[in-house]
Amino acid sequence: MESTATKGRTLARVTRLTGRDYVVLAVFGVLLFAVFMAFSIVCSLSATTSWFTHGVGAVPAGIVWTYVLARVPKRGAVALMCLLVAILGLVMGMFWTGPLGIALGGVVAELVLGAPGKRTAFRRVAAFVAFVVCFWAGHVSLIYLTGQAYVDMVVASGMTAEYGQQLVDFMYGPLALVALAAAVVGPIVGGLLGERVFKKHFARMGA
Image (cartoon, rainbow, N blue to C red; front, side, top):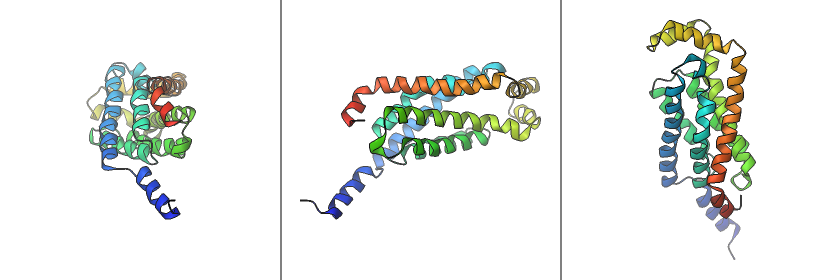
């Protein structure tokens, strides 16, 4: 029979992130970022739809998110991937509160997921919702932190003052709550879609 120490070393090897895991997290972290960026480009064509980027983009992004959970079902994997995505966001010129929201979303998602052996479908979807809401909150919080100065930041990034003002006005109007609702509903749909796509994989894992 295996000793307790041997079992402990075996468990550590199984649960510890490997070099291959880091590659998967990096590649699919970039893919996750790319999906949201693609929808950001489309939604940003209008200031009215801009703040719906996170909720809309979360639908296809849920498949990427669920794949990562299926491929690397280890503690800390999601937080690390989100940290990489946050760094990528900063490098790409995203306003700093957005990447902060992404990084914090990864930490919150880890807490929601819990131990690898206890990650039910509900927890996986809820973790994605937590991530997207934190991502959205990180982005919009800059408006509340800077007020009208946000318009100057938008102009400095190459857009018009009128567009920047519309972004600010949106977040001080009733549609802000609709955008928040979209940031909750979108990842629920995306998470459930991902669960459906990888249903057989999770069944083999017994999750």
